Length: 386
Image (cartoon, rainbow, N blue to C red; front, side, top):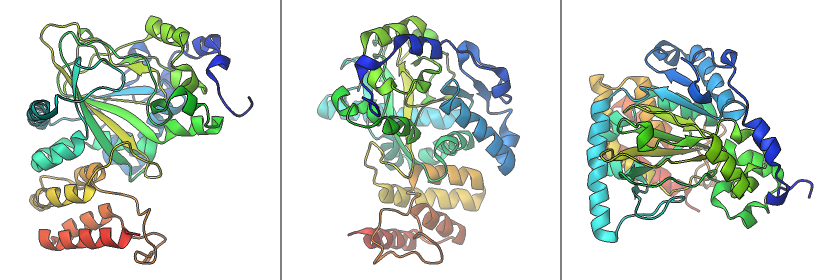
């Protein structure tokens, strides 16, 4: 039917033609190359661009074009340079996994058999609560911040889930991700075609490698350019499309601290861990547009209160630069003014009420006390209530 997609109407030959494209080097002038059709960027070499507002926008535009109409995936080498912070976060995550398994037997995966891996849902808030100093160091990556902003604009909302795949862990099935990727085929088919176009614009998928991820340990299997197949949310469950994926996917090894970002519409799947000794830990980032709905509920007010003393100290001692501070705040605080109660929370001096993120940054710049900031955060929350 015109205006809607159905699995039966999806054209495998069209999909094959789309996914047989190759990356044009002129489209990725700041990349070091595109092995297996995946553009790769050296964040150390790009530090000057990332620190200059105009050059940063050129780079973000390049990344956005890749995610939208290009390969649909990119790798940022050394996106997180503080490897000690990654190691400390790994220790925290392993502790959380052990604790949760002892209490409830652990969590399941969306697209893999239960027992082949360990999951931490809402690893964002759990890391913040367990070790706010580690959280601040871990999320102070200006490269990750730029990648998120490139696709979603400022004031994006981070959620995260740790995936730990043990030796022998099996691969996922090929799929697309949130929003429409997490609906049944029947429900997905009820949304008009233009909503299928909209869905991947509302989120960005990513992951930060906590260990060196060899091909044998099963990095994400990717099918470049597959996100450009418009009926893909209707097609990804079909056996012939999945067979084409399995025959043509690519994988790239990652080093600890590397980050992978891809469109949620890209056909992808975690790989099998065929090693005997690598426990493949990746912190999966699902970043949402401020205009959409994130998959997980996050108590960002609690996170802000927990982080405030760490961020205030980091700012006052110079350990956190302003771009790093902005990156941490973007990962933790609510950056959008709505929804709210406009009777109690009217716009003052602008078109929208103050955001939680703005309140936090102004308080840090002013050196406000934790007690004062906590009261301001609570008052802001009360104003938003219906």
